[in-house]
Length: 185
Image (tube, rainbow, N blue to C red; front, side, top):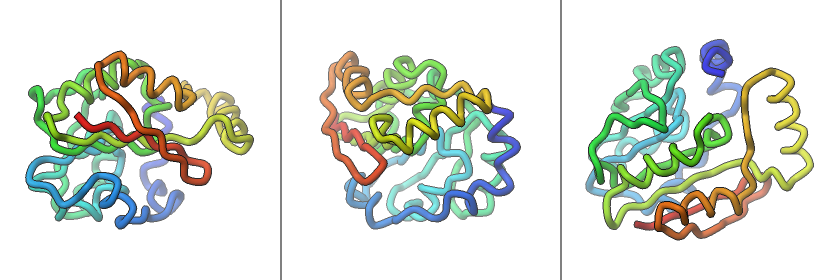
Protein backbone atom coordinates (compact mmCIF):
# COMPACT_ATOMS: atom_id res chain seq x y z
CA UNK A 1 0.00 0.00 0.00
CA UNK A 2 2.78 2.46 0.86
CA UNK A 3 4.05 2.26 -2.73
CA UNK A 4 0.76 3.63 -4.05
CA UNK A 5 1.20 6.80 -2.03
CA UNK A 6 4.84 7.14 -2.98
CA UNK A 7 3.63 7.20 -6.60
CA UNK A 8 0.80 9.64 -5.84
CA UNK A 9 2.95 12.05 -3.80
CA UNK A 10 3.85 14.41 -6.70
CA UNK A 11 0.19 14.99 -7.64
CA UNK A 12 -1.68 14.22 -4.39
CA UNK A 13 -2.53 17.79 -3.38
CA UNK A 14 -3.68 18.75 -6.89
CA UNK A 15 -5.71 15.55 -7.14
CA UNK A 16 -7.69 16.18 -3.94
CA UNK A 17 -7.66 19.97 -3.80
CA UNK A 18 -7.51 22.13 -0.70
CA UNK A 19 -9.64 21.43 2.35
CA UNK A 20 -11.84 24.07 3.98
CA UNK A 21 -9.79 25.31 6.97
CA UNK A 22 -12.82 26.93 8.62
CA UNK A 23 -14.55 23.54 8.81
CA UNK A 24 -11.51 21.94 10.45
CA UNK A 25 -10.97 24.84 12.87
CA UNK A 26 -14.56 24.42 14.05
CA UNK A 27 -14.47 20.61 14.24
CA UNK A 28 -11.16 20.60 16.14
CA UNK A 29 -12.06 23.60 18.32
CA UNK A 30 -9.00 25.55 17.23
CA UNK A 31 -6.90 27.42 18.16
CA UNK A 32 -5.42 25.37 20.99
CA UNK A 33 -2.41 25.62 23.27
CA UNK A 34 -0.72 22.30 22.60
CA UNK A 35 0.12 19.92 19.79
CA UNK A 36 -1.96 18.90 16.78
CA UNK A 37 -1.40 15.51 15.12
CA UNK A 38 -2.47 14.76 11.55
CA UNK A 39 -2.35 10.95 11.57
CA UNK A 40 -2.01 9.41 8.13
CA UNK A 41 -1.65 13.01 7.00
CA UNK A 42 0.50 12.38 3.94
CA UNK A 43 1.54 15.69 2.43
CA UNK A 44 0.04 17.76 5.24
CA UNK A 45 -2.71 18.87 2.86
CA UNK A 46 -5.28 19.25 5.65
CA UNK A 47 -3.20 20.57 8.53
CA UNK A 48 -0.99 22.99 6.57
CA UNK A 49 -3.69 25.64 6.87
CA UNK A 50 -4.06 24.86 10.59
CA UNK A 51 -0.39 25.00 11.63
CA UNK A 52 -0.80 28.45 13.19
CA UNK A 53 -3.72 27.17 15.28
CA UNK A 54 -1.59 24.96 17.58
CA UNK A 55 1.75 25.22 19.33
CA UNK A 56 3.14 22.46 17.12
CA UNK A 57 1.66 20.52 14.18
CA UNK A 58 2.90 17.00 13.47
CA UNK A 59 2.15 15.05 10.30
CA UNK A 60 2.57 11.29 10.74
CA UNK A 61 2.57 8.99 7.73
CA UNK A 62 4.31 5.87 6.42
CA UNK A 63 5.16 7.33 3.01
CA UNK A 64 8.45 9.19 3.03
CA UNK A 65 7.66 10.75 -0.36
CA UNK A 66 4.36 12.11 0.91
CA UNK A 67 6.04 13.51 4.03
CA UNK A 68 8.69 15.28 1.92
CA UNK A 69 5.89 17.48 0.61
CA UNK A 70 5.24 18.80 4.14
CA UNK A 71 8.59 20.60 4.19
CA UNK A 72 7.28 23.08 1.61
CA UNK A 73 4.24 23.97 3.70
CA UNK A 74 5.62 25.93 6.60
CA UNK A 75 5.78 24.85 10.21
CA UNK A 76 4.87 21.15 9.97
CA UNK A 77 6.90 18.45 11.67
CA UNK A 78 6.94 15.28 9.51
CA UNK A 79 7.24 11.95 11.35
CA UNK A 80 7.45 8.67 9.46
CA UNK A 81 5.62 6.04 11.52
CA UNK A 82 2.81 3.50 11.51
CA UNK A 83 -0.23 4.96 13.28
CA UNK A 84 -0.69 1.58 15.01
CA UNK A 85 2.73 2.16 16.68
CA UNK A 86 3.06 5.89 17.35
CA UNK A 87 6.43 7.14 18.66
CA UNK A 88 4.88 9.66 21.06
CA UNK A 89 4.33 9.72 24.81
CA UNK A 90 0.91 9.22 26.37
CA UNK A 91 -1.36 12.29 26.28
CA UNK A 92 0.99 14.23 23.97
CA UNK A 93 -1.60 15.81 21.64
CA UNK A 94 -4.44 18.21 22.40
CA UNK A 95 -5.95 17.66 18.95
CA UNK A 96 -5.76 14.77 16.48
CA UNK A 97 -7.21 14.59 13.00
CA UNK A 98 -7.44 11.59 10.64
CA UNK A 99 -8.79 12.53 7.21
CA UNK A 100 -9.52 9.89 4.58
CA UNK A 101 -6.83 7.64 6.05
CA UNK A 102 -8.31 5.13 8.49
CA UNK A 103 -9.39 2.85 5.64
CA UNK A 104 -5.71 2.60 4.62
CA UNK A 105 -4.50 1.52 8.07
CA UNK A 106 -3.98 -2.26 8.08
CA UNK A 107 -4.54 -2.49 11.87
CA UNK A 108 -7.40 -0.10 12.42
CA UNK A 109 -8.31 -1.04 16.00
CA UNK A 110 -4.65 -0.79 17.06
CA UNK A 111 -4.39 2.59 15.31
CA UNK A 112 -7.49 3.92 17.08
CA UNK A 113 -6.12 2.65 20.42
CA UNK A 114 -2.85 4.49 19.76
CA UNK A 115 -4.67 7.69 18.84
CA UNK A 116 -6.64 7.51 22.08
CA UNK A 117 -3.42 6.80 24.02
CA UNK A 118 -1.63 9.90 22.71
CA UNK A 119 -4.71 12.14 23.04
CA UNK A 120 -4.49 14.36 26.10
CA UNK A 121 -7.32 14.55 28.64
CA UNK A 122 -9.61 17.34 27.43
CA UNK A 123 -8.34 16.74 23.89
CA UNK A 124 -10.34 16.10 20.74
CA UNK A 125 -9.97 13.49 18.00
CA UNK A 126 -11.78 13.82 14.66
CA UNK A 127 -11.80 10.92 12.21
CA UNK A 128 -13.21 11.62 8.74
CA UNK A 129 -13.87 8.72 6.41
CA UNK A 130 -15.87 8.21 3.28
CA UNK A 131 -19.32 6.81 4.06
CA UNK A 132 -19.20 3.23 2.75
CA UNK A 133 -22.99 3.10 2.89
CA UNK A 134 -23.07 5.48 -0.12
CA UNK A 135 -22.98 3.97 -3.63
CA UNK A 136 -20.15 6.18 -5.02
CA UNK A 137 -17.97 5.15 -2.07
CA UNK A 138 -18.70 1.48 -2.69
CA UNK A 139 -17.35 2.07 -6.21
CA UNK A 140 -14.26 3.80 -4.76
CA UNK A 141 -13.71 0.86 -2.39
CA UNK A 142 -13.92 -1.55 -5.34
CA UNK A 143 -11.43 0.55 -7.31
CA UNK A 144 -8.98 0.57 -4.40
CA UNK A 145 -9.39 -3.20 -4.09
CA UNK A 146 -8.67 -3.64 -7.81
CA UNK A 147 -5.57 -1.45 -7.40
CA UNK A 148 -4.45 -3.77 -4.57
CA UNK A 149 -4.32 -0.90 -2.09
CA UNK A 150 -5.31 -3.10 0.85
CA UNK A 151 -8.06 -0.68 1.89
CA UNK A 152 -10.93 -1.52 4.21
CA UNK A 153 -13.63 1.13 4.55
CA UNK A 154 -15.24 0.49 7.93
CA UNK A 155 -18.87 1.48 8.39
CA UNK A 156 -19.24 4.42 10.76
CA UNK A 157 -20.77 2.16 13.41
CA UNK A 158 -17.59 0.09 13.36
CA UNK A 159 -15.45 3.20 13.85
CA UNK A 160 -17.59 4.18 16.84
CA UNK A 161 -17.26 0.64 18.23
CA UNK A 162 -13.44 0.86 17.94
CA UNK A 163 -13.53 4.08 19.94
CA UNK A 164 -15.89 2.61 22.54
CA UNK A 165 -13.48 -0.32 22.96
CA UNK A 166 -10.97 2.32 24.13
CA UNK A 167 -13.43 3.68 26.70
CA UNK A 168 -14.55 6.80 24.84
CA UNK A 169 -17.68 7.87 22.99
CA UNK A 170 -17.84 9.00 19.37
CA UNK A 171 -20.33 11.52 18.01
CA UNK A 172 -21.30 10.86 14.36
CA UNK A 173 -21.60 13.76 11.93
CA UNK A 174 -22.43 13.29 8.26
CA UNK A 175 -21.34 15.66 5.50
CA UNK A 176 -22.10 14.66 1.91
CA UNK A 177 -20.12 11.52 1.08
CA UNK A 178 -18.08 11.84 4.27
CA UNK A 179 -18.80 10.79 7.79
CA UNK A 180 -16.96 12.22 10.79
CA UNK A 181 -16.57 10.77 14.23
CA UNK A 182 -15.79 13.39 16.87
CA UNK A 183 -14.30 12.17 20.14
CA UNK A 184 -13.65 14.21 23.27
CA UNK A 185 -11.44 12.73 25.96
